[in-house]
Length: 415
Image 1 (tube, rainbow, N blue to C red):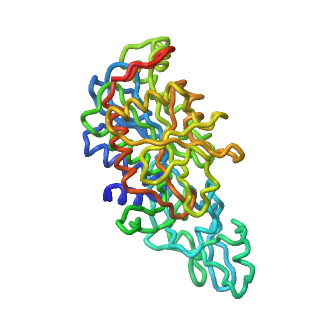
Image 2: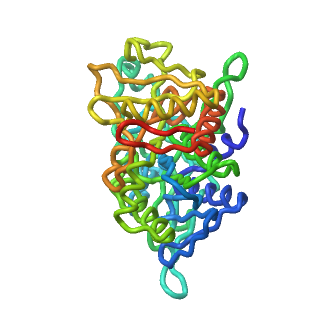
Image 3: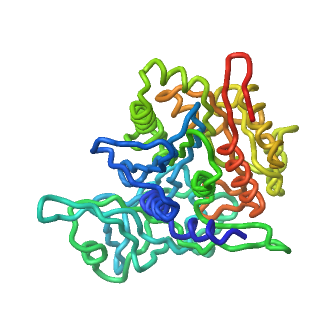
């Protein structure tokens, strides 16, 4: 099992820590940081990254030809602390939280949760932000079956009354927990060590498999020095809440970076648009595997399984951006590299989920294909995947960055 992936999943508690871990990986591979607030001087063949809001990151290699892009997201469903978070109930101090993203709420009970994110403190010249990870855990305790005899007949958790983690016995000032502060963006997130299961250790279970496997896999592929041409990885925050933030896919982060790269290449706006029409974007977010206990929930003929390779996702309503041309292009890339792949569609009588591909296209119109890994328990505190699929993902994404791809109206060149 990939130990680097397990470490990334374990320590990337929130998007803040995920981006910090990504920066460390990129720096070790020779990528140079760029500040959005400064002018950029880019060199042909240079490797760079820039960060927005502390939670979104774009890394790229300066090359020639159309862009090859991969977009994924750094955030995962969890519980977010409100301002004035401490609520007292008898001898206990509890944390007032709200749901971030679409959690499987019952999975957050009776698990270790760690407080993580960032804290904003006073500084000599104003304010400064600091990443924060608590040195203690909190827990949301279930109500005993003796006091809730119908719990196994159906239970709906109320985020306000049922999901407040216990902070302490007795009065506790929150400032003593996180230090003097003016504000914070803190979350209560699962703190479960990634673990292998199955007779041969073939399964990996961990928090944040959706979608940090995509983030980490795309960074490894970009960092591989066999990448050629103009390669870019975008790791966006806010996907789980609709992407409509400055650092989300609906913001102008990607389009702004593309324009700055084009300016460094001496391209006009018209030339950039022409280049983007010949480029290819992979929208990378995980897919639902056939559930062994509920196979009836899956499409009759497009039923991805864990261990079956990369999933190509389609949807008639545009929830996923794949079309016949972009699907054929990525299949050719994978076939040439010996990468296994499979297809996913939702049942026609079920509402589809969505991802950031369609949203990012409102800011940068690029031909796109939606991919991901097959997993179970999506949006649970602990999710499950097959370890072999991650190796296929890195192999496939590396082959994508190694390929020469030019899309045209009537087809594409793929070498």
